[in-house]
Image 1 (cartoon, one colour):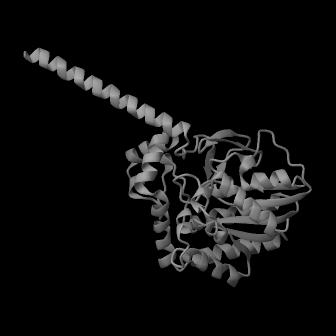
Image 2: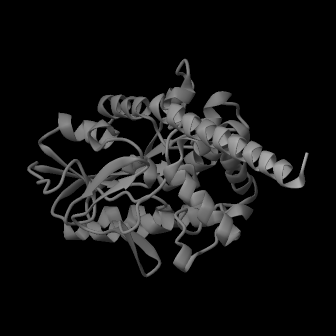
Image 3: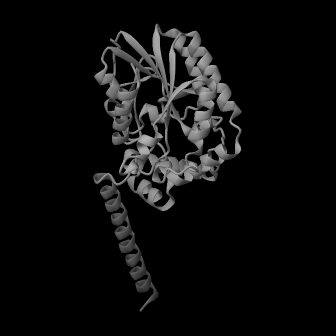
Length: 330
């Protein structure tokens, strides 16, 4: 066989294999998307801005977070729809991060949205922002003085709130914190990872099945609870309590678990809750720990967003909503 003919055959084989591979990837991507085998995890550009080191949502915006439409009001708080109006006579202020914000879930299906729909006489001001930590909540409580007669302040505490800076990284102004993994320190890889998290269901499926992100993120967090004295946590909670007391508002801290904890619910895995509860008792702050409720479910994993360490699924939001309406006096 002549060299030219041989080269032509090799090119033909290469092209055939390339198209087969391409078709296979596209097919698997469509299957992952159609059958909801995974979920996207990205925040649309232009929704957040940073001021004095703290992220805020732009007011009166529409965008996409975790493949779900989101809307903000004139305060930059999440609401069910554009031009939403508060018509209640009682006011409740929500502190939280992406879990209380409800990443990936339609607002009306989040526990705040469900409460909003049931208790129409109450205004729920949801100031939650993805990536918020305890230090951010300390600053956000200062906004409460701009609202009249805030009756209750509900702080939905996620265990990673003890970190020193936001979990949401801005490539243009990147900050490091204890939760950063080495991948995020390599800018090109981080950009690729961020793009695929926001675009590819197949990528999220393969990554979730191969790396168990829930386990990885929690064990990284557990080390901090094991080694840190948590003095900063106690002091920031004290400051929040003192400010809410001045505003004559009732503060309740609501503790939410990580998905990996609910797989076994052993004493070792629940160490963060034990340490947090001790601090809350010392400060005489009212709280509810929802961890046992999640642990008691038949399949706790179903109550969390797919391949996610702590965000709740629609079922998880319904569980929290049912706990809230039965245990919190609004």
